[in-house]
Amino acid sequence: MNVRDVLLRKRDGGELTAAEIEGFVAGAVDGTIPDYQTSVLLASIFRHGLSPSELSAWTRAMLHSGAVLSFDRIAAKKVDKHSTGGVGDKVSIPLAPAVAACGVAVPMISGRGLGHTGGTLDKLESIPGFRTQLEPREFAQVLERCGLALIGQTAGIVPADRKFYALRDATGLVESIPLIASSILSKKLAEGLDGLVLDIKFGSGAFLPPIDKGRELARTMVGLARDMGLPVSVFLTSMEQPLGDTAGHTLEIAESIACLRGGGPADLRELVLAQGGEMLRLGGVAQGEADGARQIAAALDSGRALERFRTVVAAQGGDVRVIDDPSRLARAPQIHTVEAGADGWLRWRDVRAVGNAIVALGGGRDRVEDSVDPTVGLRFLARAGEHIRRGAPLFEVHHRSRGLEAALARLAEAFELSPTACAPGPLVVERLPA
Image 1 (spheres, rainbow, N blue to C red):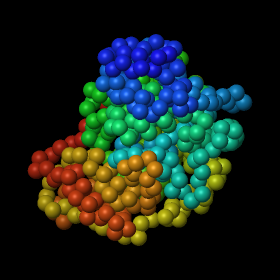
Image 2 (cartoon, helix red, strand yellow):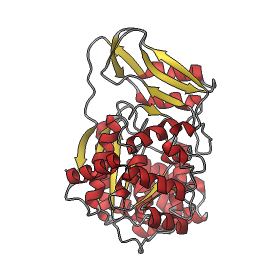
Image 3 (tube, one colour):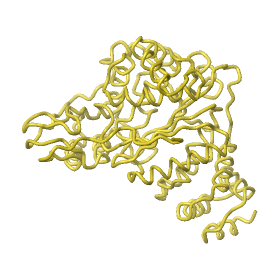
Image 4 (tube, rainbow, N blue to C red):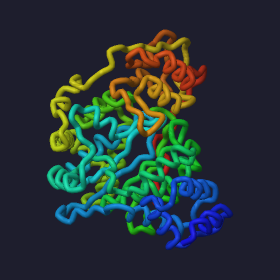
């Protein structure tokens, strides 16, 4: 392989062979191809995209850049779920134990928050002692014992993705559909899955706000998963308003525990039931999504899902006392209440600004290496479409004084009190395959 020829051909919109892609990915990971040349290729892919055959070859090369896990000792089907992320999206936390309680194994490799969205790993690590960095052997042991394991990507799993994402983040190349699709699928295929449910967000709080971009990513993911031999279902869901009643790590853990107790906000439960039901269908223990949703609801309402969560928290070193008493979770010392300045119907204009408000408080990161404060965040005291009277409380801002003024400025950009009624749209907009 001539690296310069590869770069020039892709620069001009040409197509690369599978052998060239395999060689380039291997060289980028082992360091024989320097980062500046890798960044050039990533920029060309961002500009020109990848053909279906290139995308399959790129994803396979990423997958085989590290260890591919196998869980032969576990008889149950292995099914996972992935969300492209949004503000207040804590679905994975109650979803995984509910699915496991119904007989489908969930080997979940999650990510950290970046930019305006929170990360599942950061939320789980706000439980005192909870360890997300498990090596493959311990990952398998926890999965076998609990029916689920909730971990982060290790150095040995898809190292190409770690390299490429860091370069994409540093050079402004994150929002590329083929690169997003290959990043997600390579990590999920490394889990040895039998099925995958994808939650692709659109709207002002999503990474790809236009719904047409969400549809494009959904179609790309379905086609790529089919090429890779992985059954996949996609939910296209709205991020035109925050999900649930809270955003912020410990606040969302408490809300997830409420969901696991059969309560919590209705929109969170709606997605847990719908996506969990589809996971059970893919796992072969439900006749269809509706039957699966009924099973998930029963697991939540009976306490079986909560007990499964208790089991995995203990297995991964977490303090199980927070499950019975979420007030044990660390909380920010101060709460500032934002009140309505006028009468009107609450309407979200820019949900991304809500996430940026949490970043301003220290609860998010602009760079991968940034630390986060898990205690800060927001509680939403009113829902989209609700009529609000002047002086009524809208939000609680949980803070440590740092960044409060900046956070309030971001929140002011995020919503309006409309003089006309404005009901929010449906949460689940489309399903693929239909």
